[in-house]
Length: 317
Image 1 (cartoon, one colour):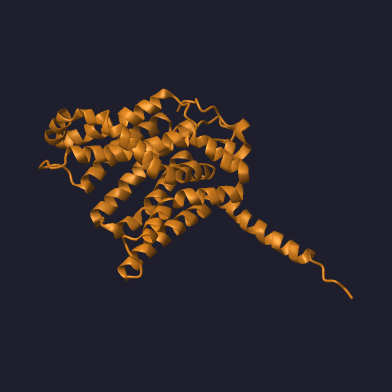
Image 2 (cartoon, rainbow, N blue to C red; image 1 turned 45 degrees about the vertical axis):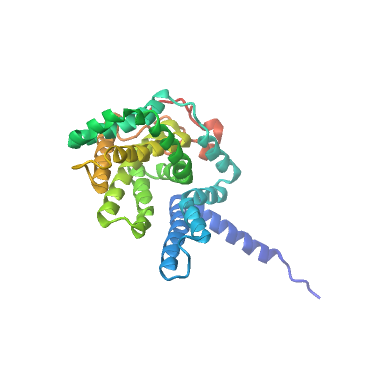
């Protein structure tokens, strides 16, 4: 009696596994985007309509867990795609970037001082009569409330998003596109990921203006990551962007003639847009990505060739 060989079945299974991993390796940005959107949108949209239909308790623990997991969709997607395409080395590279703090000190000055002052200055140009007296009356918020809010946003929001958007998606885009195009592509994907927010109380004007400011702020975050290779710096910068907007909104709370939420988003986009126009000119469109990088379209290089090939974290933009 002939015993059927298992080899053909094993070979077929191996081909299927390598086929999936091969597709992820050939299309890392697309795979990551589909997974991040799939996790977050499925949970958010499902939770919303489930609550509207009375199938879920909007204040229940299940909906709360769904929202938390949805917020972490970018992080979860990055970990899965990295594990499939680069294994332990890729995950270790992302972990190192999360604790890479030794960068040019000017980045910390920009995060904790430059970002709020840039927004306050721009808003003051349009609403000086409202902002300047409010800031003068409560200027201690700049060194008391703002840093704490910044760190809180970085840990709660930045940590669930930036290891994915800038830690994984941006290097993947940099390997395919020129730095400016890569930054725009990732920023647009990041902005689109926020669209379900429109289901939870945002007006159409607020949604559109939020998309605009998200794209522009994404360019600033790309510049920071390309220049430092540090997800930690990007986490803090993300926190500073959100906290600065909240700071101005708090300063103007109750004042007459101040900007609406949508207008404040657009003013923030204008401030960051002027900054990035200058950065684009000064860096000739490279947004801090070094030309002498062994893998010039991937920052840091350790995602491709291991830590020995990575450029110094002290490298300036």
